Image (tube, rainbow, N blue to C red; front, side, top):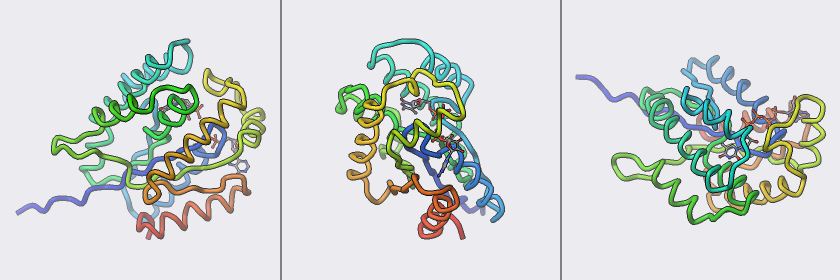
Length: 215
Ligand SMILES: Nc1ncnc2c1ncn2[C@@H]1O[C@H](COP(=O)(O)OP(=O)(O)O)[C@@H](O)[C@H]1O
Ligand SMILES: Cc1cn([C@H]2C[C@H](O)[C@@H](COP(=O)(O)OP(=O)(O)O)O2)c(=O)[nH]c1=O
């Protein structure tokens, strides 16, 4: 008789651009792999050939907020069905750079798009065949003031369509993350990402240990 494999962990990394998500995601992947876990590193929008093509459009082409929200969720649906769900079912740890909280923060709070419509799209895209709405098991929210993030990014890369937004936009996005965290305090853990890198990493490790993600 075969035993069902335990379902893996779905961990998402959130925060405004320049908060430190892409720095800490591979570090956590390495720590998990060192403990013998199979890890999948992925990102949104993206993570499948179709979703990566949608990402190119989303980061470059001007479009209205409804179109932006629909394409984000279209990319997510493909990613969810083809990559995330199968990896979790196989017992892997999935580390994803952004997920649906980003849509609430950027399209909802940043652009002012209807949160009720986003909730409906979230239900359509993330409801399993058993009728359950799936959410990440843990979300690490790297929180920094926009001025700090802008300073970090100015040193390293040219802005895309989102990163070129003014600071007031990122203030709204940050407030959006705070609202989302308040509505799901068990799932979303705020990490003060203004501190030096070793301290931020130490907190990531400690949260992951407390949740049983890291041994
Ligand atoms: N805690 C930190 N202190 C100082 N610099 C940081 C910190 N975290 C990240 N950085 C730097 O800020 C820049 C943006 O970080 P990154 O991880 O790419 O952010 P994100 O993926 O959230 O957009 C990188 O150059 C990174 O080295
Ligand atoms: C997933 C997602 C991303 N975004 C935006 C935020 C980012 O500015 C952009 C790309 O995300 P990201 O991969 O974090 O950018 P980078 O590789 O430059 O760090 O997409 C949304 O607006 N809504 C979403 O649902």
